[in-house]
Image (tube, rainbow, N blue to C red):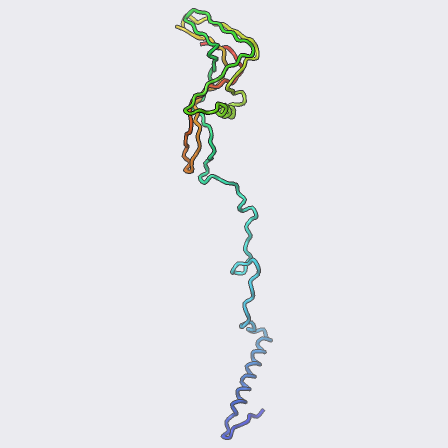
Length: 211
C-alpha cells in the first residue's frame, strides 16, 4: 500500500506510527499462536494448597506426634521407693519364747496354737512397717510378713552341748534381715534419703531353732 507523503516527500508521522503498532501486535499474536513465550507477562500461578515454596507437598506430622507420656527430664524415677542392702536369710525368733542356758543344761520351749509374734523394724523417722514389708514381699515373695501366727501347738527341747559355754532355744521362723533406705531421685538424678533403718522379717512357717 502506498504511503502518503508530506509536501517534501516525507512519510506522514501518524501513518508511520499506526503501521509500527500494527506490526508489533501481529508479531505478538503470531508468537503466542506458535507456542512462544506467551506467558511471559502472565501472573505467577498460585501454589497448591499445603505446598512448600518449591511446590512439593508438605509432609503432615503423625496425629499422635505429641501424644507421648510424661517423662522425667533426666530419666530418673521421681516416686519414693525402698532400697534394700546386705540382705541375708536368718532365723527370726520370738523373744517371749526364747530360753537360754549354760553348758549341759536342757532347754525347752512350747507354744499354743494361735500364738503370734512379730519381726523388727528400726527407722530414723517414724514409718509404717507395712511399707517395708510390701517392699520385701515384692523382692522375696508373698510369704514375707511382719507377723506370724502358729497354726498348731508345738514344743521342743535341746541340751546345750559340753563344747559350748552357753546356748539358746527359741520359737521362730526363717526370714530375712536387711538394711533399708527410703528416698527418691531429685531433678539431677541424685538419690535423696528421707528415712533408713534395718529390718528382720519372718517368712516361713513357725519352727523351733537352737544355737
